[in-house]
Image (cartoon, chains in turn purple, red):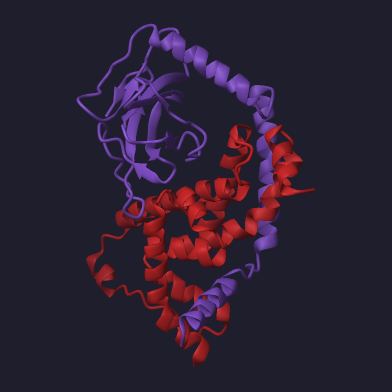
Length: 188
Length: 178
């Protein structure tokens, strides 16, 4: 068989796997019902199912500024990175501003991904804070355990070398973990 | 309505628009999750959770991005998390060494249709190779899109796809030529 024959073989296999499962329509209906139920719950909880992006950003910026005013527990060392806590009395009781710092001199762009932003590499871009090597971003996180990583130049996922690794390995890829206490301290 | 219009309306808070997107992409997500988790019930849980997480995050969706790639990124990570949790759960409840020794990875015999036979072959792949093969040959993603979804580099993904194909080749030949 030629390479073209093999390619057609793989494409045929791919097509075979696109066959819908027998119960797919029922499962799709269940999902749509859950989406509508979730929408109702969100409306009840927050008064609106969606916050405009600028409102969410403004809220985060205000809370972060308030938190930083009371100082931050920096653990960053000679080179790389650290998830730093910016706790503060002015911060919202349920959410804490956490600053993530990553040193990557050669990077063109860096973003933060985690279970708190749906692992969306476009959701939380980081900014150069010293104009050269250090990237940072502050996010509002509730108390609890959060798993995260950095995405460098859009395609390389890197665990935070200054933070503990999450025990779960995703097929060999490791992520970092930060635990935010209710007081705003970070526990590792 | 175009996908772009649906996404724009969903971002603005139109639940029906989001539900339409969910209906449109349910099939793709379900087949990825079924093959990655090899368990239909777990797969449905993961797919439902993926769409609900995406729904909560849709307000932050960046216009100009491809919705499918964004959604698959969440899905793939949900599958990885579910696979890890399940492994821990199985470790907790499977400490009978004898039972483990007796376990094999043999598949049921008597597979009669093409889809089941191919699924059984793909299920034998290492999860990373399986993931790459599914995104490439089942969902038809470009390598750059796969890189966004998986967090792996393009060269690594090309290698995974090649290794997946090399491993599948004899099994597929047996399916299609016997």
